[in-house]
Length: 149
Image (cartoon, rainbow, N blue to C red):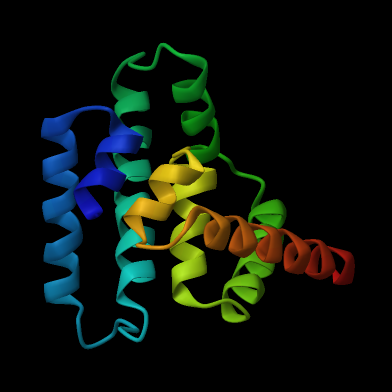
């Protein structure tokens, strides 16, 4: 799961292996301070952060990215509008506190990784209609939360 996430963001197997190892080294060295109540979400978040850090450092080194999707990842990784980041993180934290961990995994696989619903369903061992229901519920809760601001 961690390797797949790193590889999806980095699009380079060697870098993804290094990033994956960094994630697990961090888990081992900081296990006493980590919230291990939702390990899947923690590992996804750590894999994303490590991968985005690699993207940032590679951006500084050379003009590595070529496609529009890659450019968008670099833009997100380099985003410096702290207020927007804090607002978005706050809404997502509230959304995910109201949702089961499996819904968080579904959201990442569908919205971030861009997997089709059928692949998401197979990955999380659910039916396609079950995944659709979870995504619809997440959208509804997100709309309610965003209205609260």
